Length: 312
Ligand code: FES
Image 1 (cartoon, rainbow, N blue to C red):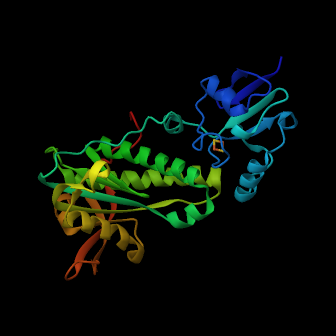
Image 2: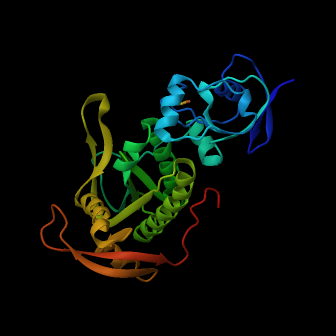
Image 3: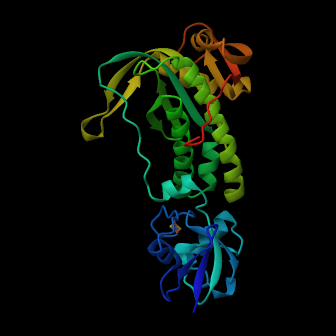
Protein backbone atom coordinates (compact mmCIF):
# COMPACT_ATOMS: atom_id res chain seq x y z
CA UNK A 1 0.00 0.00 0.00
CA UNK A 2 1.29 3.47 -0.90
CA UNK A 3 1.97 6.03 1.76
CA UNK A 4 3.57 9.41 2.35
CA UNK A 5 6.36 9.73 4.85
CA UNK A 6 6.58 13.26 6.21
CA UNK A 7 9.71 14.66 7.83
CA UNK A 8 11.01 16.01 10.20
CA UNK A 9 8.49 14.06 12.33
CA UNK A 10 8.80 10.88 10.26
CA UNK A 11 5.03 10.32 10.42
CA UNK A 12 3.20 8.31 7.79
CA UNK A 13 0.14 9.72 6.08
CA UNK A 14 -2.27 7.52 4.14
CA UNK A 15 -2.18 7.96 0.39
CA UNK A 16 -5.30 8.98 -1.52
CA UNK A 17 -5.19 9.00 -5.32
CA UNK A 18 -6.53 12.12 -7.08
CA UNK A 19 -6.30 14.20 -3.89
CA UNK A 20 -3.64 16.86 -3.85
CA UNK A 21 -0.79 16.58 -1.41
CA UNK A 22 -1.73 19.67 0.60
CA UNK A 23 -5.22 18.32 1.26
CA UNK A 24 -3.82 14.97 2.36
CA UNK A 25 -1.42 16.63 4.80
CA UNK A 26 -4.10 18.98 6.18
CA UNK A 27 -6.55 16.06 6.58
CA UNK A 28 -3.85 14.20 8.51
CA UNK A 29 -3.36 17.22 10.86
CA UNK A 30 0.16 17.89 9.61
CA UNK A 31 0.76 21.62 10.24
CA UNK A 32 1.69 23.06 6.87
CA UNK A 33 1.52 26.70 5.83
CA UNK A 34 -0.66 27.46 2.78
CA UNK A 35 -1.19 31.16 2.82
CA UNK A 36 -2.77 31.61 -0.60
CA UNK A 37 -5.25 28.81 0.01
CA UNK A 38 -3.82 26.42 -2.58
CA UNK A 39 -3.79 28.72 -5.64
CA UNK A 40 -0.06 28.68 -6.48
CA UNK A 41 0.14 32.35 -5.55
CA UNK A 42 2.72 31.78 -2.80
CA UNK A 43 5.34 29.15 -2.01
CA UNK A 44 4.59 28.56 1.65
CA UNK A 45 3.24 25.03 1.07
CA UNK A 46 6.52 23.96 -0.47
CA UNK A 47 7.97 20.54 0.36
CA UNK A 48 11.32 19.00 -0.41
CA UNK A 49 10.93 15.54 -1.97
CA UNK A 50 13.61 13.29 -0.50
CA UNK A 51 12.53 10.10 -2.23
CA UNK A 52 9.99 9.16 -4.93
CA UNK A 53 10.21 12.24 -7.17
CA UNK A 54 8.99 10.16 -10.15
CA UNK A 55 5.77 9.40 -8.20
CA UNK A 56 4.70 13.04 -8.27
CA UNK A 57 2.45 14.59 -10.90
CA UNK A 58 4.05 17.01 -13.37
CA UNK A 59 4.17 20.63 -12.28
CA UNK A 60 1.02 22.54 -13.20
CA UNK A 61 1.40 25.64 -15.39
CA UNK A 62 0.91 27.79 -12.27
CA UNK A 63 3.57 25.85 -10.35
CA UNK A 64 6.00 26.14 -13.26
CA UNK A 65 5.54 29.92 -13.17
CA UNK A 66 6.22 30.10 -9.42
CA UNK A 67 9.14 27.64 -9.60
CA UNK A 68 10.69 29.72 -12.38
CA UNK A 69 10.21 32.98 -10.50
CA UNK A 70 11.82 31.56 -7.34
CA UNK A 71 14.32 29.32 -9.12
CA UNK A 72 13.10 26.24 -7.22
CA UNK A 73 14.97 22.98 -7.82
CA UNK A 74 13.04 19.95 -9.15
CA UNK A 75 12.88 18.44 -5.65
CA UNK A 76 11.01 21.41 -4.21
CA UNK A 77 7.31 21.14 -5.00
CA UNK A 78 4.20 23.08 -4.08
CA UNK A 79 2.03 20.63 -2.14
CA UNK A 80 -1.19 22.27 -3.29
CA UNK A 81 -0.28 21.72 -6.94
CA UNK A 82 0.85 18.11 -6.62
CA UNK A 83 -0.90 14.75 -6.71
CA UNK A 84 0.82 11.43 -6.10
CA UNK A 85 1.06 8.17 -8.00
CA UNK A 86 2.77 6.17 -5.25
CA UNK A 87 4.89 6.30 -2.09
CA UNK A 88 7.07 9.34 -1.42
CA UNK A 89 9.19 10.71 1.38
CA UNK A 90 9.17 14.47 1.81
CA UNK A 91 10.25 17.25 4.15
CA UNK A 92 7.91 20.17 4.68
CA UNK A 93 8.67 23.89 5.01
CA UNK A 94 6.85 24.03 8.36
CA UNK A 95 9.63 23.00 10.63
CA UNK A 96 9.24 24.45 14.08
CA UNK A 97 6.77 25.74 16.67
CA UNK A 98 6.66 29.23 15.16
CA UNK A 99 5.72 27.86 11.76
CA UNK A 100 3.13 25.56 13.33
CA UNK A 101 1.57 28.49 15.13
CA UNK A 102 1.54 30.58 11.95
CA UNK A 103 0.12 27.69 9.95
CA UNK A 104 -2.78 27.47 12.36
CA UNK A 105 -3.18 31.28 12.29
CA UNK A 106 -3.22 31.65 16.06
CA UNK A 107 -1.28 34.94 16.32
CA UNK A 108 -3.26 37.91 17.61
CA UNK A 109 -2.07 41.47 18.29
CA UNK A 110 -2.05 42.62 21.90
CA UNK A 111 -4.51 45.13 23.31
CA UNK A 112 -2.99 48.39 24.45
CA UNK A 113 -4.96 50.82 26.63
CA UNK A 114 -7.77 53.34 26.94
CA UNK A 115 -8.13 56.12 24.37
CA UNK A 116 -7.46 59.67 25.62
CA UNK A 117 -4.99 58.56 28.30
CA UNK A 118 -1.51 60.03 28.62
CA UNK A 119 1.41 57.92 29.79
CA UNK A 120 5.18 58.05 30.19
CA UNK A 121 6.58 55.00 28.47
CA UNK A 122 9.57 53.67 26.59
CA UNK A 123 8.77 53.34 22.89
CA UNK A 124 10.55 50.80 20.68
CA UNK A 125 10.35 50.97 16.91
CA UNK A 126 11.78 48.08 14.84
CA UNK A 127 11.80 47.92 11.07
CA UNK A 128 12.94 45.35 8.51
CA UNK A 129 16.00 46.24 6.41
CA UNK A 130 15.70 45.69 2.65
CA UNK A 131 11.96 45.05 2.74
CA UNK A 132 11.36 46.60 -0.70
CA UNK A 133 13.98 44.38 -2.31
CA UNK A 134 12.52 41.34 -0.57
CA UNK A 135 8.97 42.15 -1.64
CA UNK A 136 10.11 42.66 -5.25
CA UNK A 137 11.67 39.19 -5.30
CA UNK A 138 9.10 37.10 -3.41
CA UNK A 139 5.36 36.47 -3.83
CA UNK A 140 3.24 38.65 -1.50
CA UNK A 141 1.96 35.58 0.37
CA UNK A 142 5.52 34.57 1.18
CA UNK A 143 6.19 38.08 2.46
CA UNK A 144 3.14 37.70 4.75
CA UNK A 145 4.58 34.40 5.96
CA UNK A 146 8.00 35.91 6.69
CA UNK A 147 6.65 39.05 8.32
CA UNK A 148 4.32 37.06 10.55
CA UNK A 149 7.20 34.85 11.53
CA UNK A 150 9.24 37.93 12.44
CA UNK A 151 6.32 39.56 14.26
CA UNK A 152 5.53 36.38 16.16
CA UNK A 153 9.09 35.98 17.46
CA UNK A 154 9.32 39.72 18.16
CA UNK A 155 6.14 39.58 20.22
CA UNK A 156 7.67 36.78 22.33
CA UNK A 157 10.69 38.99 23.05
CA UNK A 158 8.61 42.06 23.87
CA UNK A 159 6.16 40.25 26.12
CA UNK A 160 9.00 38.43 27.91
CA UNK A 161 10.25 41.92 28.81
CA UNK A 162 6.84 43.16 30.05
CA UNK A 163 6.14 45.20 26.92
CA UNK A 164 3.08 45.31 24.67
CA UNK A 165 2.77 45.59 20.92
CA UNK A 166 0.94 48.81 20.08
CA UNK A 167 0.87 48.62 16.32
CA UNK A 168 2.19 47.00 13.17
CA UNK A 169 2.94 49.31 10.25
CA UNK A 170 3.80 47.34 7.14
CA UNK A 171 7.13 45.76 7.96
CA UNK A 172 7.58 47.72 11.23
CA UNK A 173 6.49 47.08 14.80
CA UNK A 174 5.85 49.63 17.56
CA UNK A 175 6.03 48.44 21.17
CA UNK A 176 5.53 50.15 24.55
CA UNK A 177 7.11 49.50 27.94
CA UNK A 178 5.90 50.74 31.33
CA UNK A 179 2.30 51.21 30.26
CA UNK A 180 0.93 49.68 33.46
CA UNK A 181 3.64 50.90 35.81
CA UNK A 182 6.08 48.03 35.22
CA UNK A 183 9.54 48.79 36.74
CA UNK A 184 12.47 50.00 34.59
CA UNK A 185 10.65 50.38 31.28
CA UNK A 186 13.70 51.91 29.55
CA UNK A 187 15.85 48.92 30.47
CA UNK A 188 13.12 46.50 29.35
CA UNK A 189 12.94 48.30 26.01
CA UNK A 190 16.72 48.06 25.52
CA UNK A 191 16.67 44.37 26.42
CA UNK A 192 13.85 43.87 23.93
CA UNK A 193 15.70 45.75 21.21
CA UNK A 194 18.70 43.46 21.60
CA UNK A 195 16.36 40.46 21.65
CA UNK A 196 14.72 41.61 18.42
CA UNK A 197 18.15 41.87 16.78
CA UNK A 198 18.89 38.34 17.96
CA UNK A 199 15.60 37.15 16.44
CA UNK A 200 16.57 38.84 13.17
CA UNK A 201 19.87 36.93 13.21
CA UNK A 202 18.02 33.62 13.64
CA UNK A 203 15.54 34.57 10.96
CA UNK A 204 18.34 35.43 8.55
CA UNK A 205 19.53 31.83 8.75
CA UNK A 206 15.98 30.59 8.10
CA UNK A 207 15.41 32.96 5.16
CA UNK A 208 18.79 32.23 3.61
CA UNK A 209 18.01 28.52 3.74
CA UNK A 210 14.47 28.77 2.36
CA UNK A 211 14.69 31.77 0.02
CA UNK A 212 18.39 32.44 -0.51
CA UNK A 213 18.01 36.04 0.73
CA UNK A 214 19.35 37.96 3.71
CA UNK A 215 17.28 39.67 6.39
CA UNK A 216 18.00 42.42 8.90
CA UNK A 217 16.29 44.73 11.36
CA UNK A 218 17.00 48.21 12.74
CA UNK A 219 15.77 49.44 16.13
CA UNK A 220 15.16 52.88 17.69
CA UNK A 221 14.11 53.54 21.31
CA UNK A 222 13.02 56.68 23.18
CA UNK A 223 11.39 57.46 26.53
CA UNK A 224 8.73 60.13 27.16
CA UNK A 225 5.07 61.04 27.01
CA UNK A 226 2.61 59.48 24.60
CA UNK A 227 -1.12 59.95 24.12
CA UNK A 228 -3.55 57.21 23.19
CA UNK A 229 -5.69 58.23 20.27
CA UNK A 230 -8.27 56.66 18.03
CA UNK A 231 -6.88 57.08 14.52
CA UNK A 232 -8.99 56.67 11.40
CA UNK A 233 -12.71 56.78 10.75
CA UNK A 234 -15.65 54.44 11.24
CA UNK A 235 -15.06 50.73 11.57
CA UNK A 236 -11.49 51.12 10.36
CA UNK A 237 -10.47 53.39 13.27
CA UNK A 238 -7.92 51.86 15.60
CA UNK A 239 -6.32 52.78 18.86
CA UNK A 240 -2.64 53.70 18.84
CA UNK A 241 -0.17 56.00 20.57
CA UNK A 242 0.98 59.28 19.12
CA UNK A 243 3.42 61.96 20.24
CA UNK A 244 6.96 63.18 19.92
CA UNK A 245 8.39 60.12 21.69
CA UNK A 246 6.96 57.85 18.98
CA UNK A 247 8.40 60.10 16.26
CA UNK A 248 11.86 60.15 17.85
CA UNK A 249 11.93 56.34 18.22
CA UNK A 250 10.98 56.01 14.55
CA UNK A 251 13.58 58.58 13.42
CA UNK A 252 16.30 56.91 15.50
CA UNK A 253 15.46 53.61 13.84
CA UNK A 254 15.97 55.24 10.42
CA UNK A 255 19.15 57.02 11.57
CA UNK A 256 20.87 53.65 12.00
CA UNK A 257 21.31 53.80 8.21
CA UNK A 258 23.63 56.79 8.43
CA UNK A 259 25.46 55.73 11.60
CA UNK A 260 25.96 52.15 10.37
CA UNK A 261 24.48 50.74 13.57
CA UNK A 262 21.60 48.37 14.32
CA UNK A 263 20.13 50.01 17.42
CA UNK A 264 20.10 53.65 18.53
CA UNK A 265 18.54 55.02 21.70
CA UNK A 266 17.89 58.58 22.90
CA UNK A 267 19.61 60.40 25.75
CA UNK A 268 16.48 59.79 27.86
CA UNK A 269 17.02 56.04 27.52
CA UNK A 270 20.77 56.38 28.09
CA UNK A 271 20.23 58.28 31.36
CA UNK A 272 17.90 55.56 32.67
CA UNK A 273 19.94 52.53 31.66
CA UNK A 274 23.68 53.32 31.63
CA UNK A 275 24.18 51.44 34.93
CA UNK A 276 23.20 48.19 33.17
CA UNK A 277 23.92 48.77 29.49
CA UNK A 278 27.17 48.94 27.54
CA UNK A 279 26.97 51.71 24.96
CA UNK A 280 29.07 52.30 21.87
CA UNK A 281 29.47 55.50 19.88
CA UNK A 282 27.56 58.69 20.74
CA UNK A 283 26.08 60.66 17.85
CA UNK A 284 24.59 64.12 17.42
CA UNK A 285 22.00 63.78 14.68
CA UNK A 286 19.67 65.95 12.65
CA UNK A 287 16.38 64.09 12.83
CA UNK A 288 13.60 64.94 10.41
CA UNK A 289 10.96 67.12 12.10
CA UNK A 290 13.18 67.92 15.13
CA UNK A 291 14.64 71.34 15.84
CA UNK A 292 18.32 71.17 16.83
CA UNK A 293 20.54 68.14 17.03
CA UNK A 294 19.47 65.04 18.91
CA UNK A 295 21.92 62.95 20.92
CA UNK A 296 21.78 59.22 20.20
CA UNK A 297 23.73 56.26 21.58
CA UNK A 298 24.56 52.93 20.02
CA UNK A 299 23.70 49.93 22.19
CA UNK A 300 26.27 47.16 22.45
CA UNK A 301 25.08 44.84 25.23
CA UNK A 302 23.06 44.66 28.41
CA UNK A 303 23.70 42.92 31.70
CA UNK A 304 21.40 39.92 32.30
CA UNK A 305 19.75 39.88 28.87
CA UNK A 306 16.46 38.05 28.84
CA UNK A 307 16.20 34.93 26.77
CA UNK A 308 13.79 35.66 23.90
CA UNK A 309 12.89 32.03 23.34
CA UNK A 310 9.28 31.29 24.24
CA UNK A 311 9.05 29.43 27.51
CA UNK A 312 12.78 29.91 28.25
S1 FES B 1 -0.74 27.27 -0.74
FE1 FES B 1 0.11 28.87 -1.83
S2 FES B 1 1.13 27.84 -3.39
FE2 FES B 1 0.31 26.24 -2.29
